[in-house]
Structure formats: C-alpha cells, structure tokens
Image 1 (cartoon, rainbow, N blue to C red):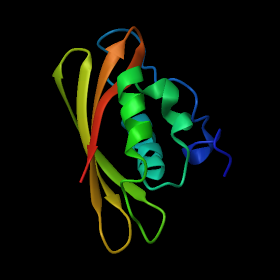
Image 2: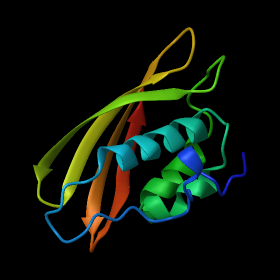
Image 3: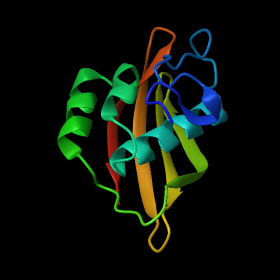
Image 4: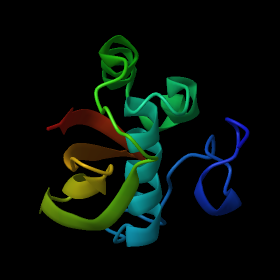
Length: 124
C-alpha cells in the first residue's frame, strides 16, 4: 500500500476536520487515526503519513519513538473509546490486536479551528 493511501483508500495526509466548534468527532475517522498510528508504531508505515494530524511536539515524539509495537501480524485496531473532558479536547483509547500480544493506544486530540490534532499518545 502506498504511504499516501490510508485505511479504506482515504488519503492519509488529509487533515481531520469535523464541522463547527462543538461538533462531535466521527468515530470512524478516529478509528482510522488509531489504525494509522498503530501501523506507524509497528514499523509498517512511515511517520510522515501522520505529520498533519499531530502537533509539532507530538510528531517529533512519534519520530523519536520508532517501532514501539512488536507484532507478528499487521496490527488491527478495535473499537475506539472516547470522552471529551472539555470542549475542544478528546481523550481516547483503543485495543490493537497484534497476534500473540495486544497493545493499547491512548491519544489526546485538541481542536485547532475546525481541525483536530493529536497532542499526546502512549502505548502499552
């Protein structure tokens, strides 16, 4: 798969936008984001596909992190669990199925205009 092509054929480089302030994010788009992040952390995609979805600080942390998910098969992201602790912020987690061992991804996104950017991420 080309690094420019994302899950379900969507452009991975397209920014995450969801209407006017206060609009609820689309769970399918959030799942695509966690899937792309899992693939980057498993070394199956380059981090550049997420550059416009992360703040500069979070993107640099992603580049430094390198391969954090060791999987014997391609990662598959399950359902996303999300909460909005305040307007303009999303905290979410997802279980990533990787074969023998599963991982959890946790992300925080903050709204910048109509675009949501990942400001923090963790995996375990």
